[in-house]
Length: 332
Image 1 (cartoon, rainbow, N blue to C red):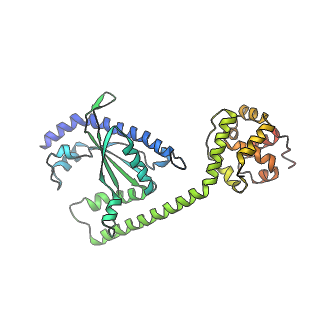
Image 2 (tube, helix red, strand yellow):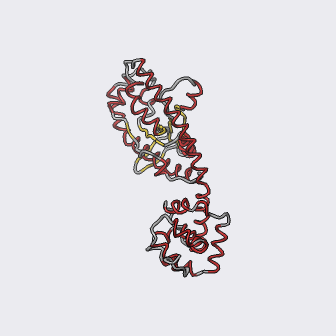
């Protein structure tokens, strides 16, 4: 193909690739949301992804440069270039990369092929520390209509999945170390390799820390889940899930009984009016929209002085809990 032919074809197909990139991004966000919801603890896409995912399309100049002027022998350069549209997913830990991969493989609207896997490269070259990223190419499994554009079957989109540290390394080195015609000096290459070795070590440490933190926080997470179910059961409203729940239960982590929910059930059985008090304050008081309000009532009955002394939030809502139970907050 000539430069003019590539430019003309790209101008014609640019809207197709733009639509395909947008479609893939939207589908992957939905698939990833489902994958994260099944984790322990469940995650949110907005917190899981460290950079905004934005499809990027090659401009005509870079497409022509890659097709005709680099040291790559293409039979059909335009068709064989698979990153005419692509996007990047940046996560915190290497284990998170596999969750994005699962989301990619779960979707039936495309056929995915692994283009590069840094873990396989590590196993093949264990003494080498170089550029690391997981690459997939997803091709439309059928003609797909997105907006008013028909994306033909087989249209490719490249997906790159990296950790935040891998991304920083790539941003610094990929265009300046791995792609230039002139080779970098041995000293620079050695420094880059050392930085990747440190990145691998840091990722290993981060994984250990994350596992330890999740193990340590599991009793609190389990208590929040149980309180959430109890709130829905008794109040009939889905509560919020703000971090104040964690703050309160962390403060009382040593006081969470194994039979917490049965104790709350007994408390509600003896003081059923508590449910109406919670409902009446749902719209106006933050704490009463959180499942941990049930724990606050339990603690105010069983250990009033202790809950007053340790309570980590402002006292206004806690005073209402004491008032509902007929306990003098000031005299405890």
